Amino acid sequence: MTTTPTVTPNVAETVRDMMKEVSGFEYIIQGEDADFTTAELITLPQGRKVEDLTSLRRKAAEFLKPARRSGTAKLADLASLIGWANRFKGSSSVLYANPDMAAPSLTCIADYHEEGPSNASDPAGEPTARHCHHRAIYNFPLSDEWKAWMAIAGGALDKDEMGEFIEANAKDILDPTPPILSLSVSDKNEPWENRLIKTAQQIEGRYGQLAQLLAMSRRFQVYETSDLTVKTNRDTGEAEIQFLNEHKDADGAPLKVPNLIIIAIPVFRNGALYRMPVRFRYRKSGASVKFTLSLYNPEKSFQAAFEEALEQAKAEIELPLFQGVPEASSN
Image (cartoon, rainbow, N blue to C red):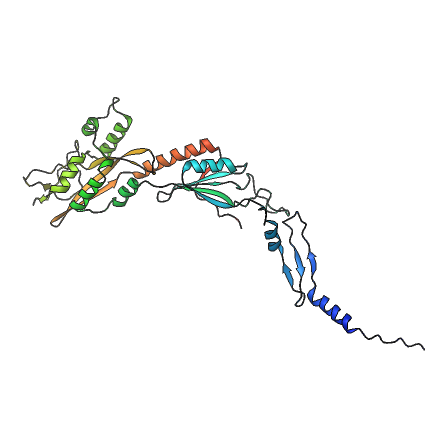
């Protein structure tokens, strides 16, 4: 009987085989060079731990050239947003307009989703979906004048505060034209004159002049009568001051206080001027008098200025425009 000799492993061979086992790696899935969508998985030592190299491989592939455009440009004016959109727009690009009066903005998404219904069941992926990573946004800068008048709207000012505000912003106040003073609507008037006249008629108002406001802020005194009656002149609006008591001046004559003034201010910085009525009221508070100035229907002027900018953007960019806030970009 022939006995097969036992072969004792060479120590060097044993070490070599052990090192190969603990230090080597094997591919489970190997991505193609030009296919960055394929995962790349390998096994490593420590009990053949599986390591995902997909993100590292894609990062290395984008070292010299990115796989797609991404980032959000923040632009300083509307012309820049228009130029950016025309430079990068494609068949799926869109505009989003946010009409928030406190923070209006216009956004262009160059790589927006393609038009058409969703097909999430496609095993190859949603065919019309895009990353929505390449964007530009223009935040409309509200004018200093708009912010100043909106800041004091509805607040109670004493006569010194009111006077300081009027003097500091006198350039914004327009003296009413003769038709506006007489509240006479006519075909001979300018359209904006008739608009302001109709506003005054709707709220039984009467327009005052800058000189009147300045004089009142410097020398205003109110003496309250004891009979607590209210007298309203619906033709002139002189008593439309919203009080329970009748007030008289130092000579005992009823006060004739205008309750409207006209301002012309831009909504956006360096924008067109918009004429707006401002309601002027006062109330007696103990021994002092409090004044209130508030823009009448400022939303209308804001919307007109915002729509004017959007019309320019739509005409020069020629992209679909949605009002609102776009969905967050995908990861």
